[in-house]
Image (cartoon, rainbow, N blue to C red; front, side, top):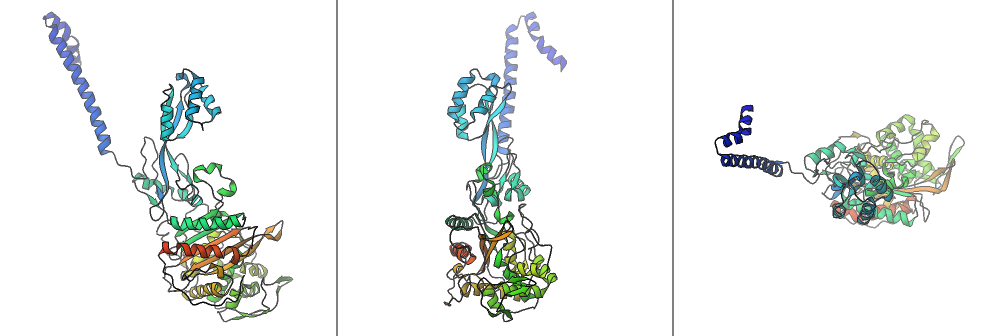
Length: 550
């Protein structure tokens, strides 16, 4: 090689010695042409390879150099919940800006939202810094058109949420580094990134139509009642899939940093409540499943029940001996307290454990909180727990336990993964007990306190709940929650298509605070509006006269 280079370098001298300089010129021109042909051929081949052979990015793949690949999030039907859009970071090297005052004015005109303080600091600096992240392609073009020196752009793959506040708590967020930090974005972080690398989408279990109805009805009621907060959940009782999950108030997922702590809180997973009489379903189910009672067992509710010096009475006292069914329909605190005392601490603890009431609800969401459960399982504590006091759980726990009681008696983890968690679960109560509970819940809508939850032809069943909150160590009737736990359709075989709805209104200050008056109507409207999306057929029941209204 050295000899060849030396030969070329001295070719001109040899040509002059031989009186042939024109031949040397032709040789040099030929060599230069060959070099340029080789270089441009290599560049053309590289460009062709990049265009034709590089892997195609799917809807969830990254499309810019250095961008992190994160799949699109969709609902179970493919509706878009979260995606990546290429934005640009504006960088300024002040050493290359000739007129910094003029540059400041022009950039401010092109980007009215840019921080003036930050822009001046960058222009006055001595090194290249980012002046504004997250420019849209249109904003980038506006700045580029200024033709200012020292300005450059770097692509950023930004996570955006096209539905803004819808399902914001459920979806969660991903940071600028492409890592999930909350909600489903965190729960399925690795799976979402793997799907993004493969160019695929990642589907959640929710149905955006169901989610929209739930949010709409919940917000309307909460705003009308001037409530502190509200929650709603819709779940498939067969699979444990979450079809809708709403926490009110909500926030714009694209501006999560601007949300207040109250709005950012996912009340479904992280807020604790004493639920009130919805807990009577668990107490009655335990009594039936253990053989302690059946629907015809008679329980004395003719007078207040005394445990030591504590007096337990009924909200709507009947002052008579009631059957177990009547205890449920009249929501008798006396009746369930007697059952709780008689069944004993070990039995009650065992069933409440199997129902998931003593631990965090098993779901993919990291925000799922542990309950505030009692350490003392004395007679008086169990009596309180029998009608929803003395234990504080999350709405997610309430939903999971209700699902187990109405689906044939199997507790399965709730899931935001389409198709469910895939767990076989464990048996909580017998098939017969589950059928009896559905029968009681349906009767409570037809003849008890849940009448306003009924939806034409959908055979809704459910249980109301109302509870006062502890304020300065005392239960305050002006601070409370109203809730309703429902199943529809309540009849049919064990493997029938069946759904659970749970709604809770937190501290309503206008109108009634009773679950039958404020939460049950929300359940009825939600069931009525989503039935078509779920493919449910309506069947009209014969009218039955109401016995109790609450």
